[in-house]
Image (cartoon, rainbow over all chains, first blue to last red; front, side):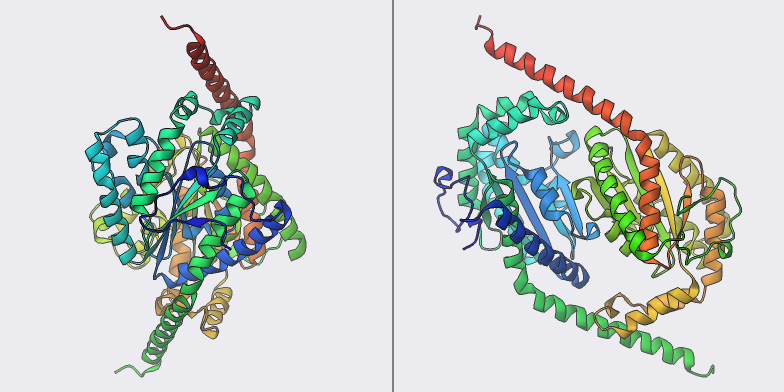
Length: 280
Length: 280
C-alpha cells in the first residue's frame, strides 16, 4: 500500500479525513531502513535520468509553516547528485516578479531535461496566500486553476514528470514545532511573528488547499497528500512515490543511453579512420 | 601539510613540477576515512553559512577533459543540503550568451548569500579554449586577466569566498580514462571525438592554464592545484581546502545567527504583547 495519498482528478478532498500521524503500521526504525533502501534506488534512477536527458522531474512541495518542506528536501534529495538537482524557493515576489503574470517566475526555473527540480513553495501560493490574504480578487485566483492546469499540462507534454506533495500536519503539531523554535535560541532565527499570524487563518488555508487539490490534481500532474507529523514517515512516503512512479521509465532511459553510446562510438571511429587515412 | 597547492599571486607555475599522482603519504583507505570526517565537518559549516546568510561561497572547477570535475562535484557536494548548493555548468556559449561580454553568463548565476555555488567550467574557458582555439584575438584574451581579477575582486568585496581548483591529471591518465569510456558501452555516452581532438592541444592548454594561474591567483580568489590522478586524493584535497578556509568564519556566522534569533524573539514578544493588550 502506498504511503502517500494520490488525489484522483476532480476528487473533493476533506483534509480532516486524512490522518497526519499515519505510520503505515511501521515503527520508525523499520521505516527509516526502508527509506534508505529507496533513497539508494532513487540515486540510481537519478543517474539514468540525468545521463539520458530525455525527461525532467518537477517536484512541488507545499504545506503549512513548519510542515517540513526544508527538512524533506534535506532528507530526500541529499545523496543525490547535486549536479542533477536544483532547488528553487519561492518567497514573497519581488517587484519585477509582480510586474509579470504569476507563472513567469516559476516558468523560468522549471527543470531542464535530465534535471530534478524541487520547488519549495510554488505557483500554488497564488491560489493559497493570494486567496486567503485577498491579494487579488476572487475571479483572478479562480481563473488560475485552469491556467495552472494548462501550464502543467504543457510541461508534462514536453517530457516533465510532475509530482506535487502536500505535507499534511495537524494544527497541534504545528504549535509544538513553533514553540520548539522559540525554546532553542539556536533555532529561533527560523521564527517569524508572521507564522503565528498566518496560523490564525488555518481553516481558510486548509480550504484553499482542498480546492487546489480538487481542481489541479490531474493525471499528468497529480497531487499527493503526505502524512507529515512524523518526519521519517514523510520522507519515506515522498521517496516511495518518486521511486514507484519513475521506475517504469528506466527501460526507455537505458535505451536512449545505449543509442547515444553507439552513436558516440561510431563518431569516434569515423574520427579515427579519418586520422589514419593517408593525406591527399 | 595541505593537500592542494595554493598558488601565490604572481607565481610562475610550471605544471610539470606538480605531481599528479601525489598521495600525501597516505593510502586510499586512510584518505577516504579522513575525507568522510572532513565532509561531515563541511556539512555543519554549510548549515551555518546558509542560516547566517552573510557570505556566499563560489567554487570554480577547471581541468582537462576527464580530470574529474563531475566526479568531484558528486563526491564533495553530496551530503550537503541541496537547498544551499547550486551547480552551474558552462558549456559552449549560446547565441544569446555570445552576444554579451564573457562575464555576463557567469555573473547572473553567482551564488546568493548563504549559498555554495559550484562552477563546472567557468569564465576561465575564455582564457583557455578561447585562446587555444583562437576564438578571439590575443589582445582580447590577454585583457581578460585583469577583467577577471576586477570581477572576482568585486565578488570577494561583496562577501563571496572564492576558491578555484585545477584538477591536475597527467596526459597518460587522461588516455586511460578516455579508453575506459570506450571499453564500456554503459559509459560511452560520455565520449566525444572532440575530447581526442582537444588532447592534441594538451601542451597549449597546460601553458594557457599556467598563465591563468600566474595572472589570476589573488589573495581574495586563489587558485589551487589539486593532484587528481587519484580520485580519493582529489576529493580529500578539495574538501580539506574548503574546511580549512571556511572554519575561521564560523564564529562570525554564529554571532550573526544569534543576533537574528534574538531579533526574531523580540519581534514575537511584541506581537504577543499587542495581542494581549485590551482593545481600545
